[in-house]
Every structure is written in structure tokens, then in C-alpha cells.
Length: 183
Image (cartoon, rainbow, N blue to C red; front, side):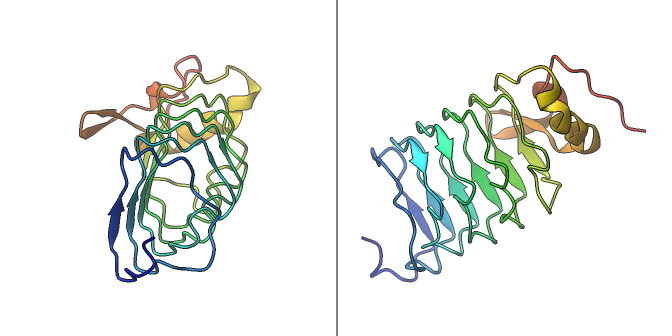
């Protein structure tokens, strides 16, 4: 639908009952930087879902019914800085989901059903400056060893939202496992 508008910068489809995001194809919207798909009916995102928009820097998928993601859902989005997946039904994080997102500096995964983070999940970039992971039913035990080590190293990057502001709070993620203080 948007193909004739090749110079689009932002598309806001918030609360429009969008049922799905089709698997991507060739770049049809090469200048699209911001895509807002929050508060829709999206339940799954296949590999390459956003390959038609390679210039995305912000992607809002909050308040949907997303229950599953694929390893390469966000492949081709090397410029993506902000990814909001909050308030969905995500239970499992694919092991290499973040690996193609070299520019990511804000990841919002709060209020999902995530219980564990796969080893090396943050990938080659490792540090995500703004990370929101609160309100997930984190499993207690060995499955959180990687996340616990990550928080010990990068706990200053973990935030919770209070309206439009972010507050640093690494304890919001894993309240059952005490973090080791940094030296």
C-alpha cells in the first residue's frame, strides 16, 4: 500500500487492528525510519519481517499478541536503534535474535512471559545502553546464569519505565537472584 510513497520517513499504524506482518521482500520503503505497529493484533513475526524497510531506526511492536519470534525476524535492520516489544506474550527469546542489530541502543521487553535469556543473546555488540526487562516471570536457576552475569557487568543499563521517564533499576529484572556488586 505504501510503495508509491518511496520517501516516507514515518508510518504510524497504532491501534488499527493490523493482524500480521508478512514476511519481507525487497526494500520497498528504503527511507522509512520509524514504524509504529503498537496496539494491534500481531501474534507472530516470521524471518525477515521488516526487510522491506532496511532504514528503520525505531520499531514499535508494543501491546500486541506476539507469542513467538524467529531467529532472523529483524535481519537486515542494521540501523535499528530502538525496538519496543513490551506488553506481548513472548515466552522464548531466539538465540541469535539480536545479533544482526549492531546499532541497537534501546530494547524494551518488559511485561512479557520471558523466563530466560539464551547464552550470548546480546551478541557481538554485547552492551545495550537502555534495557527494559521488568515484569517478566524470570525462572530461578541455571537458565539465568548468563543474564545474571550480564546484569553484573551492565546493570547500569537496566531501567524501568515510570511514564515517559526511565529509572535505573537492575533489581527489577531478577529479584530472586541477588546481583554481585561490581568491583
